[in-house]
Image (tube, rainbow, N blue to C red; front, side, top):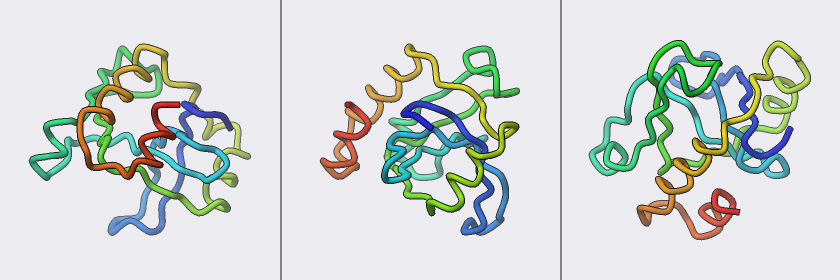
Length: 121
């Protein structure tokens, strides 16, 4: 797995456990952004959310959203276990979307400096 790869990970830690499309930001520390079906609920996050249209990412079948205020650590066993299954590998985020996500993350002061550095590097 490399930075900007998308993998479908089963997330049992969610209130409603289910598969999530996750964008790898750091494969060493298992840091990911979620791709969500709905925009975030909170005002600040809504202002800096990155929209991805279905035609911009082949894995999506509707407009989806990346909340750039929330970089998550996913347990290594879950992330690596999903990556080990070829049908859960969904390709990489296109460079123009990477730029959009970087711009979104850099437009606010929510992420810790170390997390922002991971996104921007």
